[in-house]
Each structure stands twice: as C-alpha cells, then as structure tokens.
Image 1 (tube, rainbow, N blue to C red):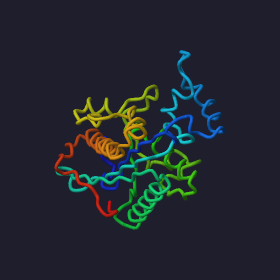
Image 2: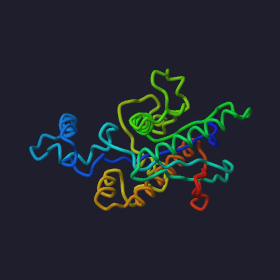
Image 3: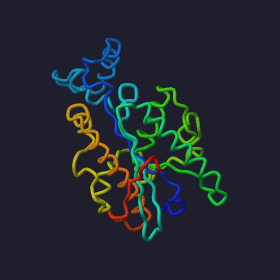
Image 4: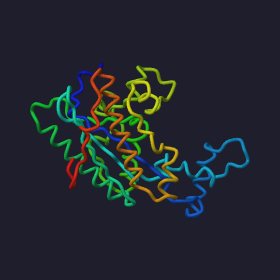
Length: 254
C-alpha cells in the first residue's frame, strides 16, 4: 500500500489555529454581528449557549481565526533506519509566519522539480489536511495578500491535478466518506505513541489566550507532524522512526 510514494519528497505538516481575538467582546461591532450569524450553527439547544460562550471555537474558521503555528517535517535516511527533521513557524504575527512558510514551499518545490531523477515531484501530507490544514493556510495567505505557492493554488483543479496533496485520513477511508477518524485513534490502533499526552486540540484556545504558552502549543504541533509521518509508515508496513532519530532544524534550515 502506497509504496509508490517517494517519502523523501513528502513534507508532513500540521497547523494550530485560534480565534482572531481573545474574547468575543473584543471584536468590532461588525465582526460581532458576523460571528453571531456563524455561531448559530455551533450553539446547542440550551439557552446557556451564546455567541460569546462558543467563541473559543472560532479558530476552526479561516474567516474568524488565525494560524499561530505551522510545523513541518520530512523523512531522511533509509527505509530501515529513517530519520525525521522538524521545523516550526510560530508566533503572533500570522503574516510573517505564513510568508516564511510560503518561502519554504517555493524553495522545496523548485528544488524537487529541478532534479531529473525526481519524476514524482514535491508532496504535502497532513491528517485531514484536504479538509482543514491546506485550505485554511491558503485562505489566510489570501487574506494577507501573500501569493499562493503552486502547491496550494488548487482552486478549480481536477482531482488528478492535486495528487501532490496527501491526506492520511483520506487514505484510511478507502473511499468511505461517512465518518471522521482522528489521528489519536489511528495512533492507538497502529501502536504509535500518542501526540495527545499533554494537550489536545480542544485546549489550544485556553493554552494560547489564557496561559500565553505558545511553546507548549508548538511542541504539541510537532508531535502531530511526527505522528502523521509514523502513520504513513505504518500504512506502508515500515518500522516507526525511533525517538533518537528525530532532530530539529536550526537557523532557518529545513
């Protein structure tokens, strides 16, 4: 399964997002009204649910949220003794981190397609990436006036023209589109160390806006990236990447 994929050309990624403001009351009146309309789809039947009480979920929408971390990683070494290199783009300045990430994508894209021995080109892989990570990044780039890298400029493209976007959740579905399968569940199923051993996605809002602990979020995001890579290796029947083979890029390298 999936043995045709050149894993050395895959950039694994994950993003963490939060609401644009710490609290609903901090929004301008126009945006409060727009969120009130959107929040109608999030509020339960109880009267206690208000646009303010569900605002911690605004981060899942590109129109009301922002990206605070993009972590990426790639596999190196051999299939028997693989290594994994991680790097994160994180901070309060979303435009800056997106600009730096776009630069990485453009550089890696050009490097891959300039090699004659590399017919498969450059690939991106995430878990639920096609439904969340990839479009969220593209939308936020447009908001900031950042030119989309070719990898993400897929509007109007046919399915066979976007085969460079890989999704480990989609791979698991085998054509079954009825349900969502979490990365944590698949990690447990394939005996991969859980990335949720400290915080999980539901805690990002509080960790960022209340605890002001971005470093903790970055660590969590990097664990998710590694888990996505490990999951793909399990799909391929390959051994997991050993903990001592994971390294972190420095000085802007990847």
